[in-house]
Image 1 (tube, rainbow, N blue to C red):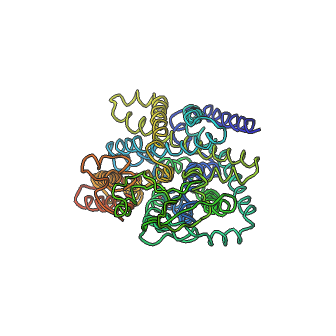
Image 2: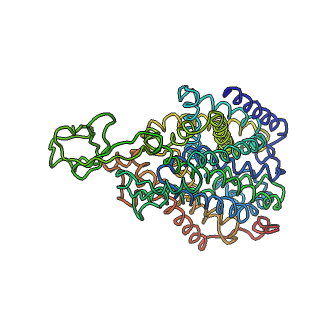
Image 3: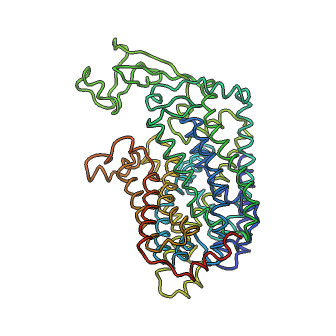
Length: 589
């Protein structure tokens, strides 16, 4: 039965991709879907591109650890990602993109400021760093397919990528948006069903939330600032900084400068279509993120009632998990200093036998989601669905995740391919006329290259990051934050600030990117440790200490880029008045 419905789903996707291929006549169709897309299709495509397995599996799993605090991200997704994005940014983007004949986000910035460098730089940044975001979406989908069909992760990864690659390369943005609308409809049905069954299984809305509030965080989580699943973490704690700066703000603000989303505004024929799309997009995002985050947090209630408890003990001031079925604890590197006064030769990984009159205090806590998922954040939602939902819903949810991943991946592949094809390669070759004639072919080749890069990253990232690191949520947040620091000040300037100069934007983009990259490599703890460059150069994992090691790069790079853009523009030559008038022609109408 499962195979049958997957086959039906793939047949429909293939047909819609074929329609996109048939209706694609030139570069405008391939890159911006002919600028005549229906608002319903545009809104669902935008939402389905925005929401992927990152939101459902990655961030839903993160809600299983952090709790309902992630709903602040839902608010930002709707208020910033839909309302402000469509009304404040979308209308001007559509109008300006039309007058400048722009087909991509980098091309819009480059033509607005009359700078081929800006277009090429933006294109290469997207090409180099969007594969990280793409890879974590691939990871989420491949992990779920791996569990659902009991196949190897690598097999699931390659099979899934090939399916998406075919209809993106052949159908262009029209094929992508047709399939997005279909996939978005499946996602809406699947997520609505998920929240209904979640509340039904837990005894209703009120009871489930009361039970969630009553749960006490186990000592390891409490030590990091966890104060319960219906409360925010302790202000200034490690958990608070990760939740607020990296997850909520990094994604909530960074969405405004996402290349694959900005181009959606250029696909409709008038501002009226954008107005009509706002309500559809807002409801869709609420169904996606609101349900995923709520269900992820509430999964703790289900697992504590349906899973065996896990034991902890306190020894020498350290909280350690007791090995299942044994009376021993393993010493980890974080707690080793607390044991050295009593055990002089102790090393990380050594065991302490609790039978030998070792003073300790045992406590038993329910098996929380993260424990039931084997310490893998991305497995929380799949395990919750698999164990608590009827079999037929597992099929629907699998199609929901496939749709979520494919809709986002198709847009990412398209954005990356056009970035390296149209925005970089076509700008550096001398024969512009010949390049324009082969534009569609060049972009298809670009998409193929970026797909290969993304697959390689999706293979290695789970190896680099250990369990419990929430790599899907973190990978998404990193790219969103990088875009906010590099592109957002330039994007705001392009749409609203006529006095901003080409030199100012170039300086702002370079400074924002440099600061964001530096922060990722040398300051942000998890990323700096994984990359290892700081350790190799300076002999320590990060250059700064907490809380700086928990703060998202966007908090530093965005204001830096904005200030540099404004200051440099004060002392450099303005663009011509005729060009400014051309750019802002009809803006506001």
